Image (cartoon, rainbow, N blue to C red; front, side, top):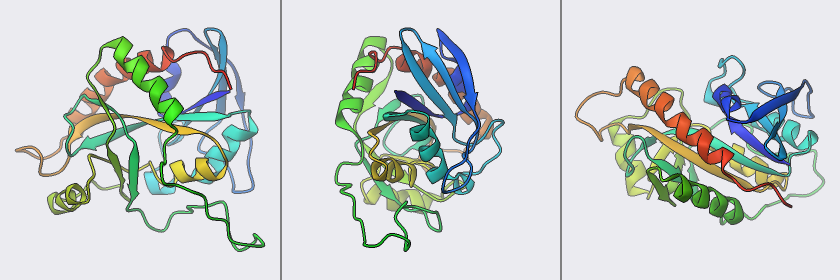
Length: 243
């Protein structure tokens, strides 16, 4: 079953019929919100609000392990995550399907493998995003005819503050194209739980120092509200899940 992680607005998807809301915990505590189950056209899907419902959790407060575990418990076998990001080499309003990620976060619970395991486990993370899911997203974006970009490196920063101009210059020198606060450890937890995972990132603002004025939350909200219609349409255009 396909699962989506993002904001509560994802459940506004056209043709979605919500059938159940699951309340459950995990070995790592409680997820951010109830897992919403529904039917989207001919297929069953799951949704999870990453920051809670309502939106109350900061990026560093999200229990990423519990979120992925809850989705898997409810039958998820693949995950598509939606992220709002800043643009380093991508313009506001662009949808990006990243193919790489660099983790700049700290202090987060970033693995399901801890000292209670009998021996170390090292998952291969060379290519962090599932290529089949990326291809499906790209095909849906091409069909929709929106402004989008194939590939790019997502910089996962700690937040909740936005970055300084100097930090963005460092990220750009490191090869990053977009910057957000939720990509890690979400992506690697999905890999450890053997769930194919891909991102659809909406650029909602120029990163710090990339515009001639300060970043405005009003501007971010304006782009986010307009871009979410495209996001929802693209997700609804994905092919019927077949595993």
